[in-house]
Length: 100
Image (cartoon, rainbow, N blue to C red; front, side):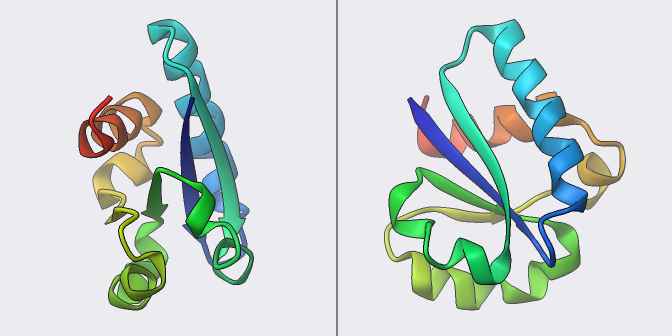
């Protein structure tokens, strides 16, 4: 099972995107675990996930999170997909990056 971690300032706005991504995963029968966390919470989880997705509102943290993440891929969610809450497209991108 692949683990996807979405990160934003407080973990709130991404929770809606998480549910859209979970619906898309169910439709594809993709075995993924998707969680939303605040940046401070996420720092303790990064080593245990396959990819970290940053919400557009904290994309300025991309370089810092990449340093913490080491070999775990870190991507910023596309602003348009985030705004439209396009869970399917965000999920597809994450799975592409981690090679599933």
